[in-house]
Image 1 (cartoon, one colour):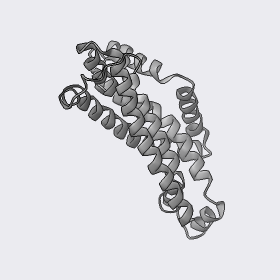
Image 2 (cartoon, one colour; image 1 turned 45 degrees about the vertical axis):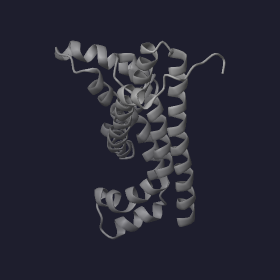
Image 3 (cartoon, rainbow, N blue to C red; image 1 turned 90 degrees about the horizontal axis):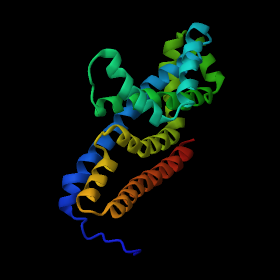
Image 4 (spheres, helix red, strand yellow; image 1 turned 90 degrees about the vertical axis):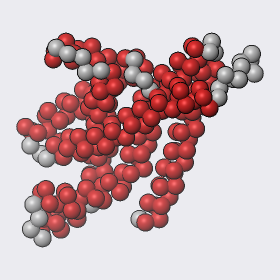
Length: 222
């Protein structure tokens, strides 16, 4: 096929080069998703609080992060933070911190939309029962918002997994880095990139199929 030779691909190559990078990509995706949802939920609550002292910095953070390409944030953090603190923190840790901070802005908008989708009558009912703002959010609003937003949250997670390939720019050993190294070692860079594309496609396609199944189940519950 177009003169390509995939004979170098073997279990040994996958074990030595690909598997370690895939593990880091998955770990980065999980940590960034969980951290992004926690920080994003906090940012969403700040933006919906009605208090300028909370709304202004949260809005500035979210809009600022969403206006900058992720690869630039990765490079800025990796290059500038060691200069400010006086020591190197490593490519992997830089990637984790950057992804959590960056994805929080996107998860914040998802959570804000989910919170606003809850009928106001339920919020008023909680207030009538004597619940405080935090109790109302924790017991009434957020559980329903999370359920409504699950498909969107998982879709953003799939996009996040694809974006993990950008950490290649700072030398972190992710899936793309491992595949690229195997291609350079065996003199088959084109075949290696094709292999990387197939792996990314297979994982993202499977996850997208699961998200569609989840959407159907949530629609039935409603």
